[in-house]
Image 1 (cartoon, rainbow, N blue to C red):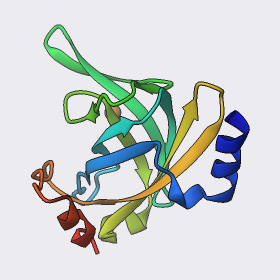
Image 2: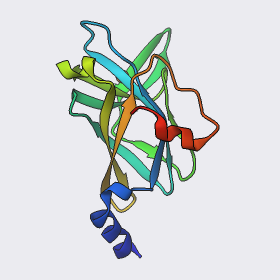
Image 3: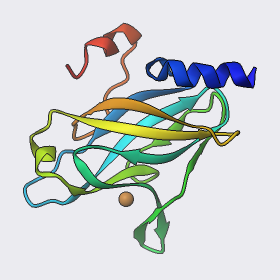
Amino acid sequence: MVLASLMGILTCVGAWAQVSVSGAWVRPIVTGQKATGAFMTLTAAKPISLVRVSSPLVGVAQLHSMSMEGNTMKMAPVSEMKLEPQVPFQLAPGGYHLMLMDLKPEFAKATVLPLVLTFKDANGVETQKEIEVPFSMSAPQATPAPSEHMHMSH
Ligand SMILES: [Cu+2]
């Protein structure tokens, strides 16, 4: 069973179905701005952790948490985000987010942001998921018909 799933990962990286991503968005930057955040909801089929994120348009991408310390919001890098099976994990302003820093010049001109999410499962096996995240000033409205997602961001 384990061997079969390993084979599956090796042979069809593109057909990943262990973690679904919904409602992803990245905040556009204004001139001179060097960092921004990306947000989304991750839902896993089995226990797995998001351990890394990268993008060709971003120099440094980190997993961040955000919390209140006294009257100030504090951001801190976290080594992983643990996903429980079938429990949507929210990355949203004011909470967990993907911190994008040292942005490349192409970032400002891009219409979508390519992101590679790296997950590590309970056996320590890493798999990657490539997504394209639309730029937006706020979270996208949930669409009642899933098929409508197919037409977004192209
Ligand atoms: Cu941050």
